[in-house]
Length: 242
Image (cartoon, rainbow, N blue to C red; front, side, top):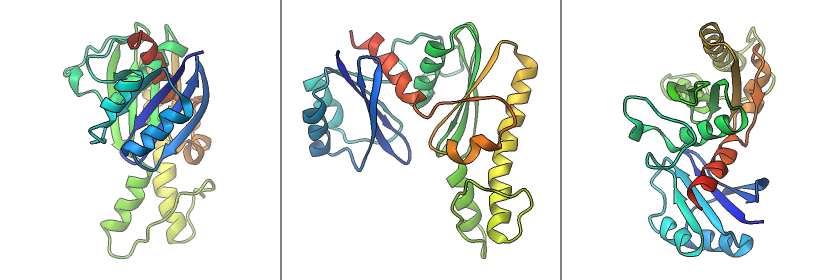
């Protein structure tokens, strides 16, 4: 089976997923994207294909290095997709959002899908049953909210996220956790309820690194898939790296 490396460079983390055929073997967090780091990956996994989704200014030689040793594709607005993007400026859609939409269409075809991604920001990504990415929303993510309270006040501490959050905070830290984390859950449930009222045959998928902190606080039924972006990148690679 062909080995595919799927690179996902977000605002806070650089990650790569290794696929054997269509099976996700493992996901690795990279310390950097220096030439030696990428060369070691290529030597270790000997991939035939690679794809890059990047929303940051990555190592300028990365694309050349991947293209010289694999069938390489850079995800952008010119990529061949399994859905349409009838939004105002398709070229401004983030590569990570394109990957999530591709995964939704691949794994949940013919449904109205809302993909909620929990990263540096929360992104709400709506793909219609006709496989159209219509847009969605963006709001601050968990770490951004916690840091904002600390950085823009004189006395509030920087609090680490926790799995257990009380509804009624009993000290400064738990007041912050209740306000931020339960507030995020209520925000997400509110969006889900609003979409459910408008669309039938409706499905919600939650992805991103903060799933463990927030999924349990949602009242709506969801599918949680931390590997959704990787799966979308693989599906896109199969279409574009032929």
